[in-house]
Image (cartoon, rainbow, N blue to C red; front, side):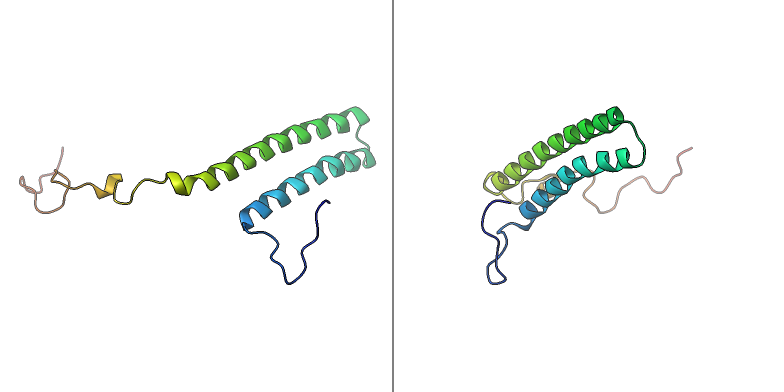
Length: 110
């Protein structure tokens, strides 16, 4: 637990999603310790509990890596966003699917 603790007058973080990601990683690390202890307590083998701990640690590491990568991408995205009105639904021009009446009537397809 490094760093100063926030007081009620100071905000905890500028980005709430970053704080949430950190909390998720902390809880996952806590479970990497707690789950094997509970398994041993209830009679599981020490080797099985150790294997579970290694599996949870691997999953936690991958999730942490993906969260960090997502945070970096989210921080970079606003500057790289394309100009508005340049998507599929904002094309100009005429086409077969622009509404209005179509010739051919309402004949069933058989």
